[in-house]
Length: 422
Image (cartoon, rainbow, N blue to C red; front, side, top):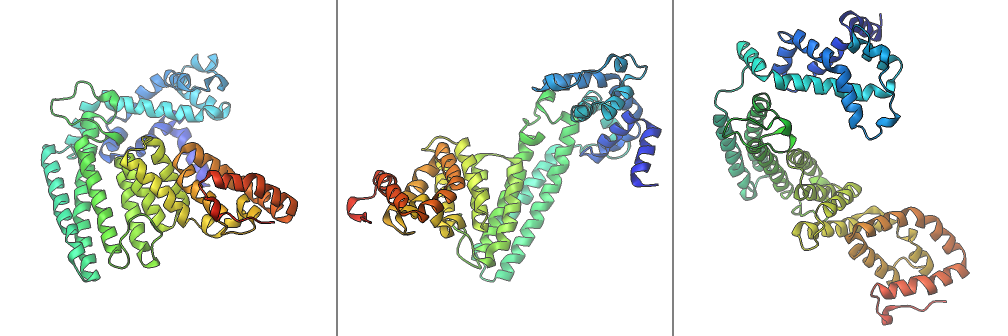
């Protein structure tokens, strides 16, 4: 019997509704909650899901802006003695486009069951010896102390001459940070079952429960997790500075520093998952540039400029600087200069007019969303045009005289630097 046939046989034995619920329960992030749902409360959960599945699917479909193109549940399904099972089988056999909405309906029902039965689930966890920690604040204090200790160790790295000793200090600090993160993830799971992890569960909480931050974390846990990852970013960059120039996010680093940049990128991505704001995204872009991933660095800078449109904001200005650094470090602008129409028309990759237009691109166009869109379109369209211009002298002279020279003048090229060519 194949694995697929075995899976089908198991699903038929327990029923399609039960199989779907079991699959969701198997992937519950908190294994303690999953164990309760899979054992002592499984039958209650199945009854809850079976009784509400048709209505839950209808609600999901109603929320879909393209719901008009989705099939309606037939009367034969709603009239069936077991409408939940009939619904699942109908979707599997005849309405595959509803598979996604049906999965979401299952997830919502399981989540709703957990919220409605939180007290019973917590008691079952305690009975199994896996209940939430009694004193949440003790865990917060311990995690904070571990991060502070690690921070002090990291701050010593620049003063250590030996790379091996600096690396040992960094590893010891990272052990402290990881210990803190384990504690904080445990608190986060306790918080999720004790208080919920979404805005819908924020009513009627006990006094003193910290406010909810992004990612379903309480604000104190989120802040400490963020600090732990950001301190690790600093440590990796300090080590990188011991084998090359300091990492300032303006250039592609030497090969000997790349491993440190890779580690720093992992840490900054974790920090961004906790606090997805513009300054963290900017640092991610700077590290991407340092690694040599200019495309990713450019996209990060563009997103920062969208998030922070105020041109006087330091984060916006830093993103503009990143765009300029990306343009300078990009293999496209370093190696493929002749793909520009201006280069073809002037017949000289280093012509002052061409340099003026490149400077205008980096300084002005990259600084606005519309300008960046124009540049991307230009990069896609210009190579065949440039090739045609370079092969036809009359076209080349016309483009030079009536397009490139006027645009270069508008871009700020002084008259005494222009060349007259025939």
